[in-house]
Image (cartoon, rainbow, N blue to C red; front, top):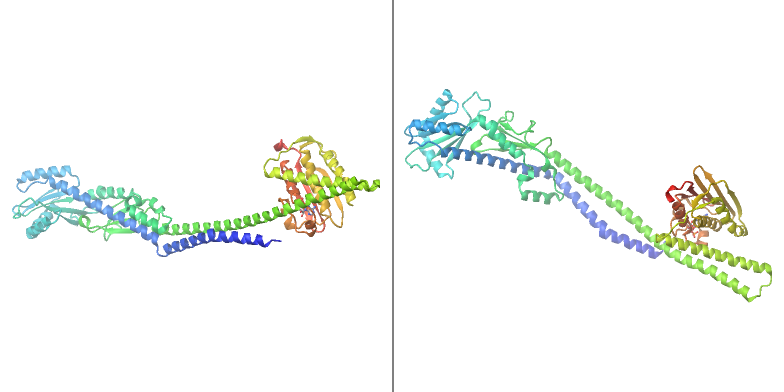
Amino acid sequence: MKSRRETNTRFRLILTLGLAVVLPALTLIYVNFQHVKSIQRDKKVEALIHRDFQYLLSNSAKKMSRKVYELTEEAKATFPSDDDSDDEKRRKFDLLLEKNPWIGHAFLYDSKQGVLIQQRCANEKELASLNKMYNGWFGLEGPFLVDQLNKKPKPIMWLSGESDASDDSSPYTTTAIFTFPQLGKDRTVLGGVRFDPVYLRQKFFPEILEESTSLKLNDDTGQNETQSFYELTSQGLKEHEEQRLAMLVYPMDALNRPLAMSAGWNGGKPEVSLNLDNAFRGLVLGIKFQGTTAQAIGNRWVFQSFLILGILSVLMIGGLVLTYRSVNKQVALARLKSDFVSNVSHELRTPLALIRLYAETLELGRITKEEKKNEYYSIIRKESERLTALINNILDFSRIEAGRKEYDFRETDIAELVRNTLDSYRFQIEQQGFALEEQIDTSIPKMKVDREAIARALVNLVNNALKYSDSEKFLGVKLYRDNAVLKLEVSDRGIGIDRNEQARIFEKFYRTCDPLVHNTKGSGLGLSLVRHITRAHGGQVEVESTPGRGSKFTLSLPLVQADIL
Ligand code: ADP
C-alpha cells in the first residue's frame, strides 16, 4: 500500500517538475511554434531573401555606375582641347582610342567648327548619321545643355540605347556627354565618348556580374540586415547565404535577349530585378539562386523548424515520462528501504530472543527429558543458522552496494557442493514436512566457482521455497547439464508469483504483495543476491511460476567460464 506521505512526496516532485521544467518548456515550444507559423503565413523568409537580393542588385548597379564614371573621367582628362588644330585633335583622339579599348567613338563639338568624331572602326554610314545628329542637336540645344551640365556636381550626361551599327546583334550602348567647366561661359564646347557595345557585352557586364555573384549574400548585405534577420527567425537562416547566385543584364522589354549573364544562369525569370538608370537606362539587372528558389528555401526552413519543434516536444515528453518513472522508482525504493529496516530488525530480534529463551531455560536445568533438551538445542541451532544466513545476506548485499564484493573462484565439484549444502538443510526441510526430491547429475565436470557464493544462492532459493509454500510442501532440486550450460533448478508447489511481479522480485528489497509473504519474515535481498552471484559467474537466473501452483527458479551457468577466470 502506498502511504499518504509517499503520495505527497510524489505529488510535490511532479508539481515542482511541472512548474520548473514542463511549463516553461511548453510555453517556449508554443511561442516558437506560433512564431514559425507567422513566418510561414507572411512568407517572411522569402521577403528577407528578396530584400537581400535587392540590396545586392543596387550594390551592383552602383558598382557599374561608379565604373563608367571613372572610365569617362579618365578619358576626359586626355581629351583634345577645342583650341587644337584638327590634326592635333585627331592625333589625340587616336591616342585616346588606343589607350582605352572600351571607347567606340569619341567626339568633340564646338559651336564654331561643328563636331569632330573619331571612330574605332570606321563606319561611314554611322559616321554620317552621328555627324548629323550631334550637329543638329548641339546646334539647337548646345548652350542650354552646357548650362545644365555645368550645374551638376559631375558635368556628365548619358545617352543610352541601341547604337546605329545595326549589324551588331545586341547593339545596346551608352554615350557619356560632358562639358569642360573650366572654359568660359560664352563657348559651347561638348565632348563625348561612346562605350563600345561589344566591350560592354563581353567584358564590362560579365566582369561585374561575376564579381557580384561570387559574393555570398551576407558578404554584401551588411551586418544590420543579418542581425535583424536573426532577431526575426530566432534560429537564424544560414542556408540562403550558402546558395550560389546567378545574375543577368537584359534590355527592359527583351528578357529573352540578355546582354550578359553570370555563370550558372540557366534561363528562366529572375526572382528579383532592378531597372537601371543613368548610364544604363533601359536595362534591367536580374538575380536568382542557382538551382533553387527563395520559396523552396522558405518552405524548407519552415519544415525544418517544425521538425525541430516536433522533436523537442517528443524529447520533452519522453524526458517527462522517464523522470516520472524514475521518481516513482525512487519513491518505491525509499519505501522498500524503510520496509527493509523494519523487517530486518524484526528478523534479527526474533531468532535472538528465541536463542536466549531456550538457552536460559536449558541453563536453569529444569529440563530433564533428553528428548526435550534435543529439541531445544535444535531450535537454538536452527535460529542461529537463520541469523547467520540473514547476516551473511546483509553483509554480502552491503559489499555489493559498495562495489567491494569479490568472488573466489576455485575448481569445484559442483554436484558435491549442491549435495553438501542440501545435507546441512535436510533435517530442517524434512522437519517442516517437505518432500525433498533431489536429481543430481554426478557426471558434471569440475568447474571454477565461488563455493560459498553458489551455496548461498542455493540456500536462498531453498529457504524461499520453504517460506513461500503453504498447503503442498514439496521441494525439488535438480542439477544437470544442458550442452555447455550447467542448470540448477529449485522448484516448489507453493504460492507462486504473479506474472507482473516475476521480473521485479530480483530487485533489491522487493517483496510481492501476497499475504503469506507479508506475514513471512524476509529482507527482500535474497533473490537480488542470487542474481548478482549468477551474473558474477557469467550466468543468469530465471523464474517460471504460476500463482497457486508453485515456482521454479533456474540458475544457468556456462561450463566454460572464460570471462570470469
Ligand atoms: P525475501 O524472501 O527475504 O522477501 P527474496 O529476495 O528472497 O526476499 O525474495 C523476494 C520476493 O520474491 C519474496 O518476498 C517473495 O514475494 C517472492 N518469492 C521469492 N521466492 C519465492 C517462491 N519460491 N515462491 C513465491 N514467491 C517467492
